[in-house]
Image (cartoon, rainbow, N blue to C red):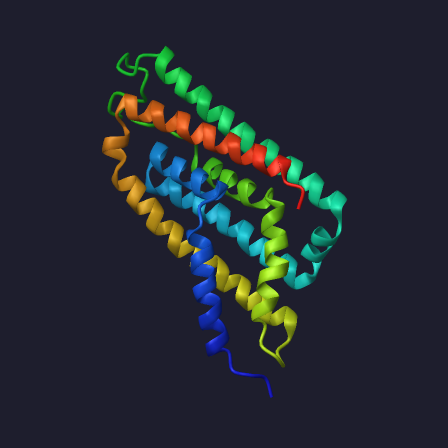
Length: 221
């Protein structure tokens, strides 16, 4: 007889909450989208990130992430690509900070109907894509999925079915945590919209993203 799930799910939920709260590249990208364009942009980035989380979980269920964990070439290829993505995001943030200095924020360059100097971001699809790419290009997420999720598969249960269930729960927990982050950051947009604050935040997020990219590139497992 398969063992009941409640205790397993409770343990998994606690571990997944702690993991979701650990800051990483996705946190920076989601917070930046929320600061630039508000809650809808932040939530679009969150949905992109959770699509990546779910994809990694489903890949683990299919056994694909085991190949990533076992193959040094596959891991290194994705690691370098992920590092390049993070560095590019960081460079864009630093360039945005320079543009805020070079172009006065009260010259009327803002879009019609927006307050002078108000943060402007891209489309919701662009925010979603950034969240998805950030997560999908992180090989540690794949290795994590194949090493973390199977620990919580109850004895007697179908492993693929249990991994799919855990993957969905993992994505939902992540979604709940980041929704709170988006709400808090977007609530502070009025303060964050100040030109000096925006430049500082652009610089900070740029440096952090580049640092995370360099760290990922230097990772040797």
